[in-house]
Each structure stands twice: as structure tokens, then as C-alpha cells.
Image (cartoon, rainbow, N blue to C red; front, side, top):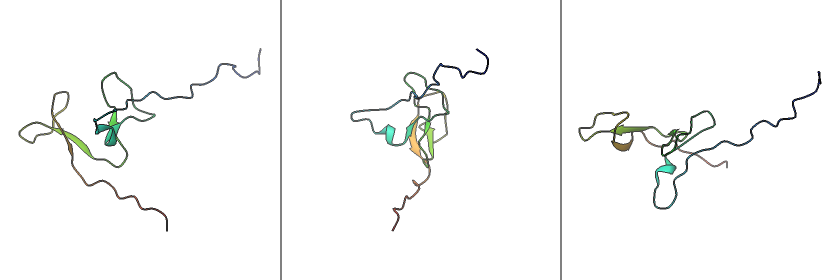
Length: 81
């Protein structure tokens, strides 16, 4: 009927990748509400984490195997006094 709200509820959950066990990468990378979720992949660095992937020669690489490198110090988070 005209003037009535759509009874279909909007999505209220976001799927995301999360590592478990001995894998600590989820401390540095994961996903966010605006990133695409793909099986077997982490979507983006976590907030305030500068990450890159390097080859053995120290060059930045994309779409190939590399070493995960944190390229800047983590931002300090202070508790309120």
C-alpha cells in the first residue's frame, strides 16, 4: 500500500574475516563495514596500522606472496585520566 514502510528489515550484520588460534595477523589486519569480504583474505589493515607486503629484496608487492611488514609505529592509545 502507498505510504507504508517496507516491512523487509535492513541487514544488521557485517561478515568479516577473523583469524584464530596461533595466527596473530588479526591483531593487525581484518575487515571493516565498507570493505569487501572474500574467502581466505583479510580485507584491510586495522585502524591505525600501517601495513605492507614486501618481497625478499624489500620491495612492496601486491597480488603475490610476500612478508607482512608493519611500516610505522602503532598509534598510541591513552586512557582518560
